[in-house]
Length: 396
Image (cartoon, rainbow, N blue to C red; front, top):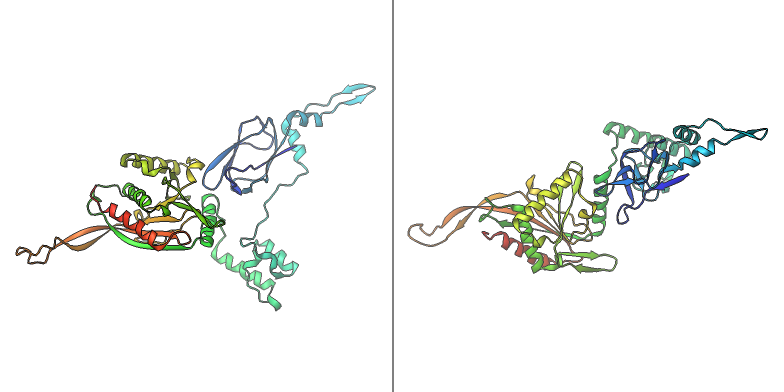
């Protein structure tokens, strides 16, 4: 018997979700044959068979989450399986071989005494051990898959009673079944929790006047160009912060993380050395990575290593927001929905205009810059945003 355990699929990821099995118990497989596809933090990885063997057992079904280092597939050597069941019986010194069984029947016999592995429901909070409840109440909670840490106790000395569990069961029945997050949304939830626990965020809002070029311009491309100039002028925002060492690494090239919204969740592919792209090349790059993301073919390496992030949420709705800074980065820029505003211009006091000037409609792009105040001062963030807005105001 050989048990293949889920390997580390990338930089210490703790778990992966089974997307699709390409094999089943009883199959005779060969080395490097595709075995299963697994979804990690934001990429789908196909795992090949490690050897020539017979599949005995699969530890999980599509949608199950497997932790790194846990059993994934059980194999048996084809020759060993057959020989173990087809030993020769001797009579008067003569060997009488038994009929040779197929590999499928051998696997069936090997698997007969086993029970299917099922993942035990885990407490979301991991806090249920300290609650007070009798064994009968714990059994009732287990039967209905209720996390005791979320039950409000009403018994003596804060003890959870049967009625308390039944009350929660009724509430859950009314609101509907819990749908656990998996794949991209599970990774996003964990990342947001980490950011909330670690980062000290401050958001700076302002409006950039893009009247001179917006009608024929590419807003995302212009934003990236302006961010590159701002990073050059104020490089402290293009950096990684180390919370353990209490220090930062200022990074010269701008590896831009571009937030891309999909039905599966939020992806942030990275455009490396974004400051080097021409406008046309940048548009082509953006189109390419969006297509790869939509097809779930984006490489795992292209989802790591950004030094600053851009979220163009205004393409959907909303003017301002408080974008989330993801460690170890220290800044993220959000671009909101365009709006128009009337303003006076050309205030030349002449007889023709009676000194009143001219009313002109301006197009404004609302900006929201969130920065990690552990690493960035308010002055540094303001100078960054000022350079960015000045470039956005240029007519070319």
